[in-house]
Image 1 (tube, rainbow, N blue to C red):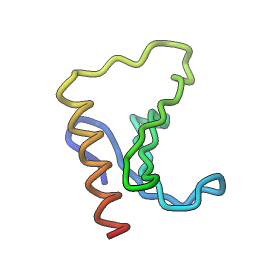
Image 2 (tube, one colour):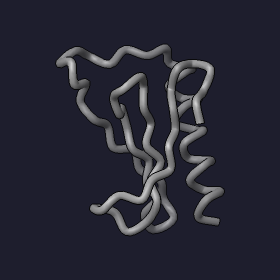
Image 3 (cartoon, helix red, strand yellow):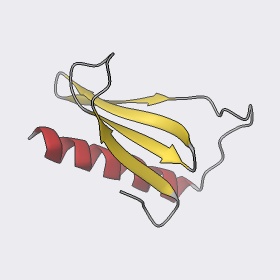
Image 4 (cartoon, helix red, strand yellow):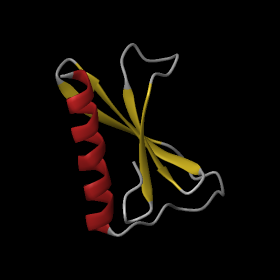
Length: 77
């Protein structure tokens, strides 16, 4: 799912997790992963591959994290 702010959310089954995760991408780099464990949601942040700081508008980042959580919640419900 591509969002209007340039984030892309992809539900994925990855080898190091027992359940689905929601990957959050910006361009060609994964920025974060949202996962559910014991009825709680966690965010794992990844470093920028260009060795620069990630800089996002606050509301766009919150929107992407909320959308990732909703998609993951809907997928595992």
